[in-house]
Image (tube, rainbow over all chains, first blue to last red; front, side, top):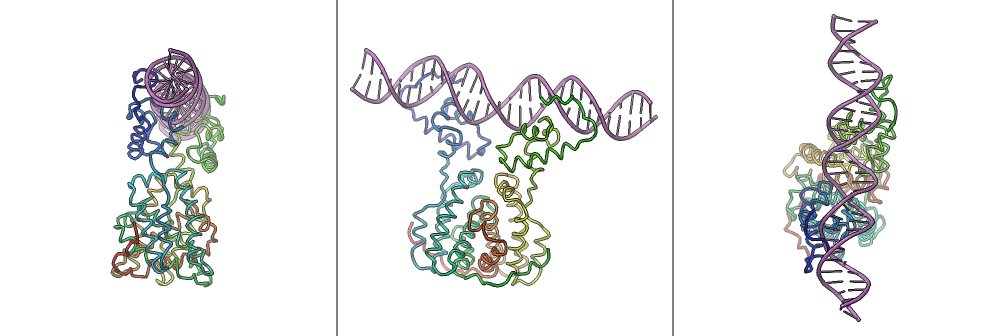
Length: 202
Length: 202
DNA sequence: GCACAGAATTCAACTGTGCTGAATAAGACG
DNA sequence: CGTCTTATTCAGCACAGTTGAATTCTGTGC
């Protein structure tokens, strides 16, 4: 199909890298489903079989092409040190600096990737919640940490994953300002043990 | 393939309904990608061409089989009436009663559906934000409404769409209690105009 | 009653998908 | 130089969603 003389080519062209580059461009432009392995291979100027050979599968290439992170552990360590009063701001800062550093399209892409969502979920539930709870201490620390993670998850979701205009449009400094009160309350306000608030009608 | 004598069958079997039922079961069990039109048709006891005929495409059937709602407008109207003090609780209640009413798998399914996410996003940004801002009034009402929608989005995301254990495990009454402080702060605490909080290191 | 338009169904097949197995040529290394 | 491993092309398989033609029933107008 490409008539490029069968067998191993001369020199050592870094085909793997060219495939990753081509894949990245196409995945970002047309999404996972909308991109075919043949298109990627074509753009890289090689045969489509190479993609299975080098990356095992289309999904494998997808994982390599887009760096589907979840959260930067170092940034979290930073945030979980220092005075409790500034914790909210440091957490918001850790989230925005990490996620803002990536192309918006790439973030939205993660929403469609099962593995990325599983990773994010796992991180939030078994890392963030317990670390924050440890840091907070006190009786219902886990409850407050849960609320905080819910708020942070809200920022991640409405700003990066499925960008809701007013949230996504905020300059990153503004994010701290706008979400500060909510996150501070989540972290430090002990949830009142008041009786169920009558759900009006329903 | 089914040898059921070609042409229109006797009586008026509601094949459309049987297809929807079969599709629903399979989509919930194996996801969108994992379900083939032939499998659906097979389960419904008809030919796979009928699915294109009746629903236009596989996606069309998907849309019909799972009712991909976004938010119940009536519940929102209820919430946006009454004393401002109870607003947070009423909003949380509106969200949980609506989403709890649906099978968890079906909620998670929405995450993989572009249209559903677009609908949710559109609703949050052009309906919820402005309605809440109107209700709140005051100078930075939009800012506070934005924060509130962020928090509510966090609940939706971490509890239903990509269930993070501690949040998802909360009984629905507890959701109001745990997220109450954060949402109240988002709605009513005017964001301080303090200078950027030095991002420690990075 | 009956003709006949339209609706519902099956079947065969088309196109496009990711992936695999065999063939082949170059590099790596003793 | 000989051999083993690695990188590549090619042909094609199995399965996906969708389409067109053929077929049979339903429902309406006369």
